Length: 166
Image (tube, rainbow, N blue to C red; front, side, top):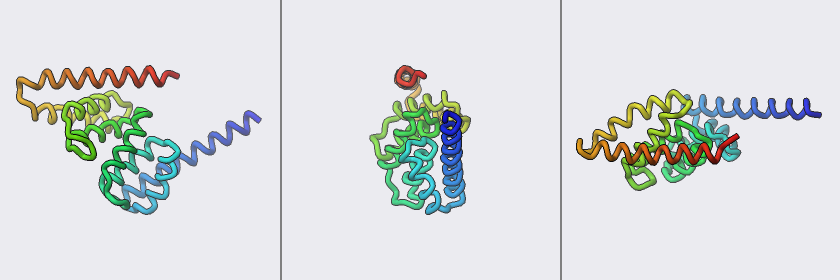
């Protein structure tokens, strides 16, 4: 019985991964109808990769009506699972005031969090954005704004780790 349960879990995990990969490939090939078909159910089941890519669809208006609030909602669901690209996207949203009030310190915070991600692409995006955002401040303000973002980022990271101990 345990072997059967393990086999079912492995098959389900493989099917879930395949659906995400198919959805991502469809998105990249601009087959948004197929991407939505593949990603929506997985996003609804809590898959953070599916939530991220579906968020991109809503944020860019690809295959769905452009809706920054819905994109942000999906990114927030994904960051609850420590999804690095979603963390970086939230930083972009705060930088541009997309569905949220513009706040550069919060944008830097999310980029700093993304910098700690296992996702190399998220780290690269964050690494590129942080100095650009800091550069928008007067030179005398930069150290204080950076420190404010560092404190907020570390607080989020510590809380996430405390709430997600295995």
